[in-house]
Length: 166
Image (cartoon, rainbow, N blue to C red):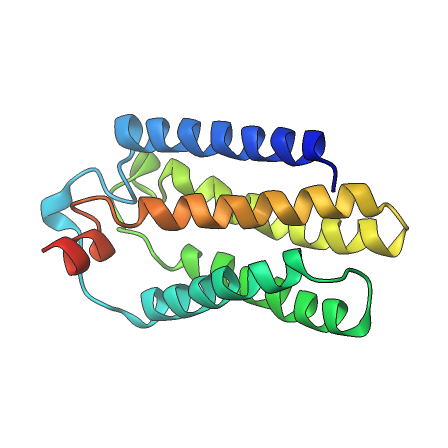
């Protein structure tokens, strides 16, 4: 990936993340509009989400920084894609019914769930069609988005923020 594509991918991902964070903070919280009602326990969906997101975060650099296109890259890429899809699916079950957007329990941050479930298959399609630049941009962008979203989990008042910082 050339530097220009990487910078554009990072800029778009950061812009979307900031927009979603702003919308979440003003119109639906992080899956709840009432922090007092939020369940701050490690449920099965939260544990699955943490496990798969952490796995994808750790695996990402090994894929991004090594030789591309060989059997190892493809194998690790399939594992990473599966982890990302599992992360997105598990996020659907992390919500607070009666809160969030129109009482659905979903916040604006759940847009990343849809974004991931669309872009993983598109990234795979792109590489199969020989659109390597598109594939690199999509997968790199998803990885950067994963890291940014992961950083936001440590905000005070959120589960990991409370676990780490008290």
